[in-house]
Image (cartoon, rainbow, N blue to C red; front, side):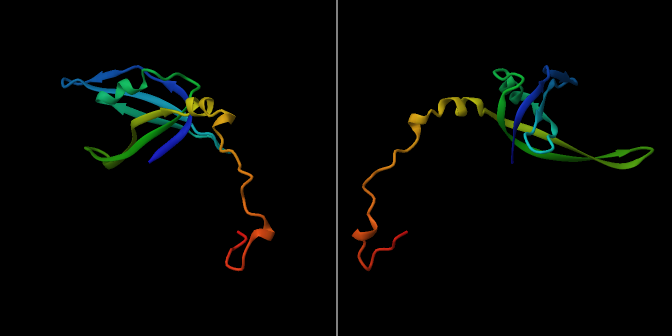
Length: 123
C-alpha cells in the first residue's frame, strides 16, 4: 500500500529494550478535501530512510499495516494497529524535473479525413 502527502513531522530515532529495538515516527498530512494526519513508524534499519527528508516535502510512502493482540490481566483482550513505512520517495523532485521540454511533441503526419480508405477507422 502507499500513502501520499506532505511531511508534517519527523521524530528522532528512539531505542527500546535490551535488544536495541529502534523506531522513528513520521507524521504525514494527506492532501485531500479533509486532510488526515497519519502517524507512520519506521523501524530498525528503515529509521535511516528519513535522514534526507524534511518537513513540508511531498512524498510517497510504501506502508504495511500491522495488527497485534494483547491480553490485559484486568481488561481482557485488546487489539492494536500500526502503520509501518518501508520505502519513501520525494514527489517534489519529480514535479521539478518534469519540464515542458519533456512533453511529447505532436506530429503533423496524422492522416486527414479525406485520406482514409474504407478499411481505415477515423479514430
